[in-house]
Image 1 (tube, rainbow, N blue to C red):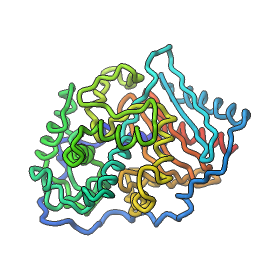
Image 2: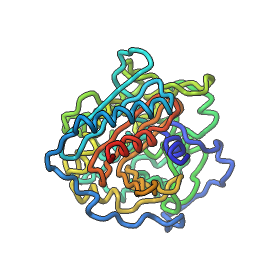
Image 3: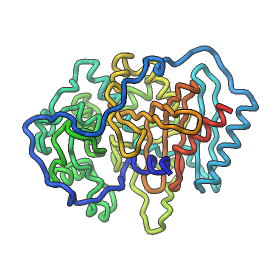
Image 4: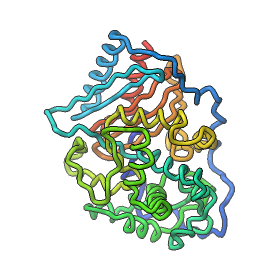
Length: 382
């Protein structure tokens, strides 16, 4: 089922691809190359970015349908813990969290949905004139392959060609804490997979490098930059970026279906997906992004200007954002957001223009957060 594939392939710490780069020869490039991959998505119409402010409410009947959809999704996924929130653009909120056993852990891991936070901080620095999307990676990390040809833009949209260090089989087998510097070293040892701009390929290492750039330019640790620039600005509660080496006690534990699979160390994700929190806060983040509270409207729309096809038909990637554009029965799904997952957890957060609603879902286990969110939206439509 395509939804399961989406959730698994947007992993914050693991992607279902071979390690050791045996399927390619490293390339050295003096400059970026023209894109030669599958066609990019057509420009999105202006209407999809129009978030209405007309006051709306959720009726008791609608809330009951959402409750029923949530229960159905949890039974289907077998998730030990699941949380979800639906927020209408003009107001009206529903949320629900369930776990197999009572737990003092109120927060959930959001995996690669956290990449959107990294992108926002980078783009804020661009707006402030402290960065340019055309700045070369060599300005900060000349030790990385093709650093003179790779730009900030390439890192944001996954066209850098850098090998994603988390795909290295030795690093996976090693387990335990992995620092960003270890990840960069592993990535560099594999060499570049293609010239920057030539193709699209997901790279968690690229986002780790963006985290380091944020720290050098902003002068504070990555988690502090996220707190100051996003969490505090929006007045969010129950959401934060993990600090280096942090072992949070307030997060629902990851639950891989394979008993031999060790859950990842959450802080290893760093700027590639180190966000924990509640779904209401994730909805507030996406509302803040799309309504101009975090970025200028033209900057935000620029995130969706060029959308590269991802792993699965109907999914596309911009500058730290995803677009889902997929036929679904008598309608067509169009979501603006981001998904993520790792063995034992999955998450998605987005805005659905047709329903004028923000939806965020996170779960433990290996079920599909994306399919769960779609079920909730169908209940909202009905």
